Amino acid sequence: MPTPNTPLWEVFIRSRNGLSHRHAGSLHAADATLALQAARDLYTRRGEGLSLWVVPSSAIVASDPQDKGMMFEPTASKIYRHPTFYDIPDEVGHM
Amino acid sequence: MYTQALNQRGEGDERLLEDAAALERFQARIDAEERIEPNDWMPAQYRRTLTRQISQHAHSEIIGMQPEGNWITRAPSLRRKAALLAKIQDECGHGLYLYAAAETLGTSREELLDQLHSGRAKYSSIFNYPTLTWADMGTIGWLVDGAAIMNQIPLCRCSYGPYARAMIRVCKEESFHQRQGYEIMLALSRGNDEQKAMAQDALNRWWWPCLMMFGPPDTASQHSDASMRWKIKRFSNDELRQKFIDATVPQAHFLGLTIPDPELRCVDGHWQHGPLDWDEFARVIAGHGQCNRDRMAVRRRAHAEGEWVREAAAAFAAKHSAQLAAE
Ligand SMILES: [Fe+2]
Ligand SMILES: [Fe+2]
Image (tube, rainbow over all chains, first blue to last red; front, side):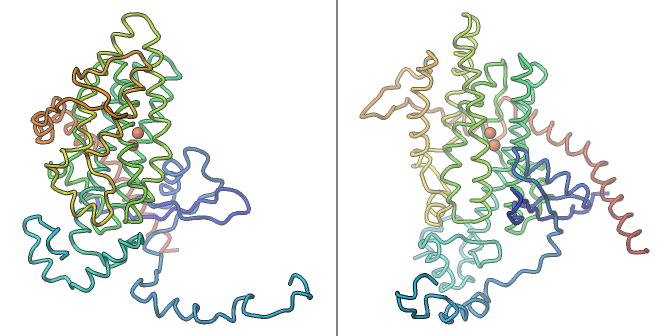
C-alpha cells in the first residue's frame, strides 16, 4: 500500500527575543512532533532561531491575489491617515 | 509576439487558450522586476519550465549526497569527517528547500520523487562520476560546489519568488562547502609527492565534467530563450562557464596544480578553454555515465527502505488524531 501524501507544514522562526516569528519555509511531516523535529534539522542548523512554530499549511487562509485591488487599494487613497497630511508650523517644533 | 519565443513543440494549442492580454500583463510584471508568487496567474509553460528546473535542481542536491557519502567513513581526520557530514546534511536540506519551492507550483513532492525514481526526471550530469580518492572530496567542494554557486547566485534574483528565496538560503550555506573543499586541496598540494599527485589526478578527472555542469553551449541550448525572457535565467550557459573558468584557473595556480587543458590561454583577462566533449555529456545525461545505474539503484533502495517508516509515522498520526477527536 503506498503511503498517503505526508501533510505540509509552514515553519516560522523567531531569530532573537524581541523579534516576531517570521516565515522560513515549509516541510512535510506526519504529525506536529515530527514537524518540529524536521524544522529544527532543516531550518536551524546555524543558530538561526530561538523559537519555532509549525503550522499545518491547510490551516492558513490566504487572500486572493486577484482581489488585491479591492483589498488594499482603498488604503492608498486615505492620505489623511499619515502624519505628513497635517500642517503644523515649524515654530511648534518636533511633533 | 509572445508566441514566437515559445518555440518548443506541443505548446501551440495551449498558447491559443491563454489570454493574450494576461500574457502581456505577466510579461510586464516580469520586465518591472516584480516577483511572481504561487497564487499569481502565470502561463502554463512558465509553470512547467520552473517545475522541471526546480525539481531537477532538487534531485541533483539529493543524488549529490552519494558521491561524497562514499568517503564519510574514510575521512582522514575527525575535523574533516565532521565537515563532510555537515556538508552532506546541507545538501539534503537544499534538496528539501527546493522540493518545497517546486511544490508551490502544484506538483506534490511524492510525484516529483516518483519522476526521479522512474527515470522520467533528470539530475546534474556531474554526480554520475565516481569519487575514487580523498582528493575528490576536495575537488568536489572546490569545483562542483564552486560551479553550483556560479549558477545559483543569479537564481537568487529569479522571477519566481519561492525559488529565489530558496536560493538565498542555499547560497548562504554553499560558501562553507567550497572553502572546506579548497582547504582539503591546499593541504594535499602542500603535502608529499603522493598527496600532490592525488590532488592533480582529481583535478584532471573533474575539470571537464565541471565545465559541462553549465550545460550545452549557447548555440545548442533549448530552454534558454523563454527562460531569459521570463528572468528565470539571467546569464547564458557560456557566460556562466566563462565566469567559472576565470575564477578557478588562478585558484588552481595558487595550489600549484595544472589545468588539464593544453589549449588554455589568457586573452584580455579571460581564460579561453579548449573544446569540450559534448558527446560524453550527452551519454551521461542519457544514463550511460560511469555511475548512473548505481546512483539510481541507491536512491530507489533508500526510498523503498524508508517506506515502513513513512507508513508507521502516518499510522501513528492517524491514531493520535482519532484519539484526540474521541476525547
Ligand atoms: Fe547544494
Ligand atoms: Fe553544496
